[in-house]
Amino acid sequence: MRIDAYEDPGTPDRRGGWRYLAWLVRRQWPRCLAGAVLASVWMVLLAATPYLMARAVDHGLEPGDMGALAGWTGAMVAVGGVNAWLGVMRHRTMTKVRMDANFRTVKVVVGHATRLGAALRGQVGTGEVVTIGVGDVQTISTSLTAVGPGVGAIVAYAAVGGLMLSVSIRLALVVLLGVPVLGLLLGPLMGRLQGREAEYRERQSVLTARIGDLAGGLRVLNGLGGKGLVADAFHRDSGRLREQGYRVGAVTSWIQALGVGLPMLFLALVTWLGARQAAQDHISVGELVSVYGYVVALGWPVAFLIEMGHQLSRGVVAARRVVAFLRLEPAPDEGTRDAPAEPSVLHDPASGVRITPGRLTALVTTHPSDATDILDRLARYTPSDATWGDIPLADIPLPQIRSRILLADPEADLFAGPLHDVIGVAEANLRGAGTLSAVIGDEETPHRGAGNCATSHEAPAAAKPPPGADETAKLTAAIRTAAAEDIIRALPDGLRTQVAAQARDLSGGQRQRIRLARALLTDPEVLLAPEPTSALDAHTEATVADRLKQARRGRTTVLAATSPLLLARADVVHHLVDGKVAATGTHRELLETEPGYRALVARDDEGAEDTERAEEGAPAR
Image (cartoon, rainbow, N blue to C red; front, side, top):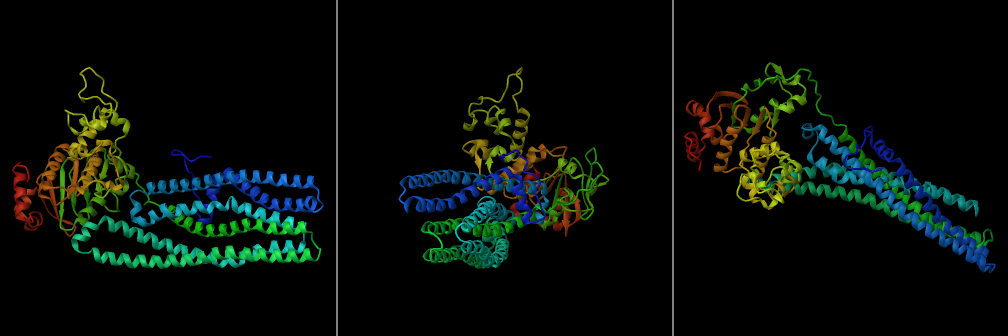
């Protein structure tokens, strides 16, 4: 069985941690069975070596039979060679078992996160998801060592007990009862470990989320003078996590110490009893050697059993966290009515906002969260009484809404990869562009990232359009509208340049334009964009505003902004006070009639001057 990028990982058992681990075993039971068989034979043959050694002593060395001694010695060499091969195969098989469980869990978690979609952030924190992906997945896969060495340890334990019965019933009883006694001694520690591990994981997820928030808002915090306050809070939380980690480590250290020390005491007890019986001629010298060898060989199974209990205790805690995540469900979609066939009015009764189709509408408010809430309701990311035409959004199936209404989140994730993938264009379609310079509007010199592409994007009149021409045209338009041409020119390989996760290697303004280009590339019927130019300088913002108005002409576009450069180009502006429409009109009309709007938008003389220049058609400074 093989896990690849296209295989369905299956439907996980979400009834509990133990059931989830069992599901992972069932999904690859042939491999798990092979690992258990290989481990069992490997550990039994470890115990067979003392048996062969005893025969070599009793039947070859003691009577002086060199032929028998050579025969038994050769058998030990052969068994050792076979066991070495078995050890290699056992390790390879169990590595595949662990990797399968790792990747299968990753695919299940990522797939479920995708199904949750926008509901994910409202139900679980970022730190929780990161902790599951980084720590819990690895812990779960490691716990599956119980399938191979764990089963093999039980089989070897029973086999050694049987071999001991042929030597001495008393010694066999000591061996057979010793391991259950070890289990009774370690059982309470295993239970305590689960509790401490669960608490540690919870605190770790909280701290991970705080790290992400701190990293994302570091510049803002520094500007507000709040960096030291947040740093102190983080220091306290990390101190609590460290203390909890010490508690987990204390329990783990006791388990590992007892796992090493108790088997040694066990070995000493059995050796002492075997020596007494040999001194009393109850067993032979060879049998004494075999008893010592059996106990030494039993050290492996005992160590694996203790390790199995330790790993399973941690694995079930991690599995419970994964199961809890998999139990999350998106809000039910009970829509049964079709969306309006034609562009229609979007109306939010809670705020009084009405969005006329085919126009550029702006929402202006002192509190950006008010405008964001309105856009969330109009895109049906939160429950509301909003309507589309005369149909409540709640009555329309969600896929129909998502296919026609796009909310361009200003903090939308940017995944690592080539820039064209980040924007949303496949490599195959990019090859049809002719040249990358055609995409960014530089017709004179092909971009060095273009490889063997042609040197001109203008095809002969009779030539057939190259593959991906339509996608290339859309990409060109989206990049130009977002004024992102200079970003591509500045990158070493243009659109094929590798971008880090969240585009951390780009500036804030560049990231904002890349997000806008990605949203425009989808060409939605309705585009909702909160603060699409907040990180841009005035000149670039004016360019984006002009191009956006032109590109979206005749299509519904809603912006949440307070920038005069954007508002001057809006067809309709809604001024919101406390989340409700206080006035509606054009930017010029509201400046003349609404003092509150004028105070909010023209915050200083420079802003007012830029507004006037924009209204007169002159470029902003």
